[in-house]
Amino acid sequence: MTKQQANWSPYDNNGGSCVAIAGADYCVIAADTRMSTGYNILTREYSKICKLADKCVMASSGFQADVKALQKQLAARHLIYQHQHNKQMSCPAMAQLLSNTLYYKRFFPYYSFNVLGGLDNEGKGCVFTYDAVGSYEKVGYSSQGSGSTLITPFLDNQLKSPSPLLLPAQDAVTPLGEAEAIDLIKTVFASASERDIYTGDKIEIVVVNADGIRREYMELRKD
Amino acid sequence: MFRNQYDTDVTTWSPAGRLFQVEYAMEAVKQGSAAIGLRSKTHIVLGCVNKANSELSSHQKKIFKVDDHIGVAIAGLTADGRVLSRYMRNECINYSFTYESPLPVGRLVVQLADKAQVCTQRSWKRPYGVGLLVAGLDESGAHLYYNCPSGNYFEYQAFAIGSRSQAAKTYLERRFENFSDSSRDDLVKDALMAIRETLQGETLKSSICTVAVVGVGEPFHILEQETVQQMIDAFEIVGEQEGPAAEPDAAAAAGQEAAAADQGGSTEEGVAPMDI
Image (tube, rainbow over all chains, first blue to last red; front, top):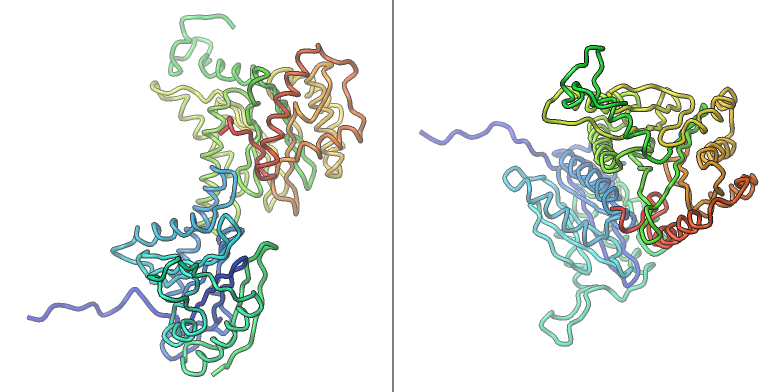
């Protein structure tokens, strides 16, 4: 008597890749705009990026229905925070909230692979990277999603700081300028879309710095 | 009102068909410092008088942002008002979450009224001792409602509650027919004039009043003290005589404290630290 298996899954993977890079006074968060299911494309113009607070932006790949639900949860919690504290949530605070929200559903997780980027309280760029159940870490750069296996090694080559065992401790934030970081993002996505079928169409690039938040787009391969 | 044998419990009717505890709760509203509201077709302005207890303390917060399209001014037991504001904020957030659209004002005031009614029919509760002027904008236009401790609510073109509100009401009654088509700035000016009426001769300064606006294309926000002071000066609405020296000084000192804290805080909710 073999164990009965489910004949449907509550999850689906809508593909796509997300990247974030932290700089000394800026943070770049980018994601492609393709939403797919199986071998089909659902739309070429879907935003995976969500502004959670004034200086805090999240990009998520995975199951977009769960991503949307997660974004709404965080937005509602942020409103409550603003009513209670009279100010916007800082990026590190939002990072912890996201972690708690994800772990809350430890036994029926949000199928959402997130990168959170923004400026911390001192105005320095910060990036937090997550797994589906809320384990997170502050890093200098990160990539998630279907193209992450192609993107991460390249970012490591360009941005990785020397071993954390070296003293004095090195800050993982890249010394690259904002324009160079954006250029790197464009290169990285162009390469990923060559080989990853789920990444392509367009990149949405969001830059958070002292002047605020701005958005740019770049075309990618449509195949 | 005098004490009588029917006023101990909220669940006791008097032979004349009155619930005295509810009426006493409405008295509490009349004791609070004044709050006024007025609306045009596109904007609603809320104003209130802020009187600090002493030179040393900050004034109580009487105007609360509930959502981008709704705000409330209270008179009476401010603690009750704070709790009800928190309830209103929650309702707005939950509605937005479910329906991806702003909670219609009329719905919110009904929920608020029903919540107040519950407290008039339970022996282990007491009525809320606060009157709320709810200002909100939705698809059907600009609205101003007054919610009573009794659980009743009414819609108004303009209204005033709290102590010495009759003076403001008289002013508003004279002018209300023009409000519908008033411009936003004229509406704020009328609000400041109405507030001045309740001050009974004391100088109108931005440190003793708070003004908030919500309208088409303008989310609910409390006006900055400097803006209010400029409008007062521009419209040349200063009280006829100086009040007794102690009162305005005390109010001004409290106002400076609040102003200093205001600069640090966000423009939407200028609150002094002690008010939280």
